[in-house]
Length: 242
Ligand code: GLP
Image 1 (cartoon, helix red, strand yellow):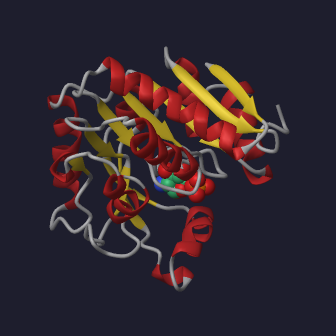
Image 2: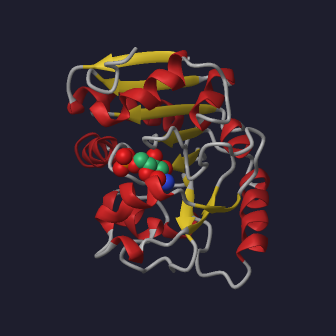
Image 3: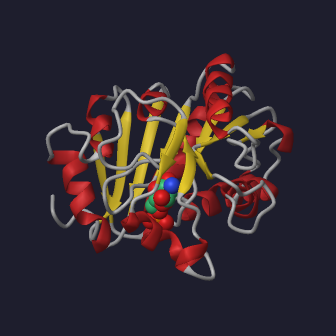
């Protein structure tokens, strides 16, 4: 695992965007990206939009799979992760909307939807680069503590902590769906490269476990210690407990 400590959000964004650019260029228009929501990746997305506009970085032919989605929200719901990714990235670049895929939160049978989504990632040939944030409890995607490190895409129930952390995106905490569809840790580990980004003091404990803790389902992100190509980009506050 390569750990990069950056001194500004802009530098972090550039480091993460460099990873995306490498994969897009190597893929010659056929790369598959794994996209994540949350505030952590947004700076990198802004940098990718800038490179698209200023430097002609093209996403034509690129496919994207989202990491997770709330059960019960369709792709147009204001808090849906699919909408978030459109607003923060894909509406502003030349990616084909039909190639931006996510678990369908509104599916009648979420369990079957999870299986279908997991299979569709495999059938596409897999993800070249997965971007990740990290929850304060060490979750990646929505794989909460004690998630199986071999888990596949499935329905999960959020912890109270995660509901509280994510309530800022909703009118009221009780509006946060408690069920989600998330790629499993085993699914995430199949991505050929992974870049996790985090900033702020509130992530320091999780980042310390991620980098230095024992590999344990208590801190799901520690699974990345066993990934052959994982990069961690953190600011000084998030790195404070290393
Ligand atoms: C949510 C998402 C995660 C994300 C986490 C941290 O729980 N499912 O993918 O990493 O939030 O979000 P933020 O980057 O906003 O702190």
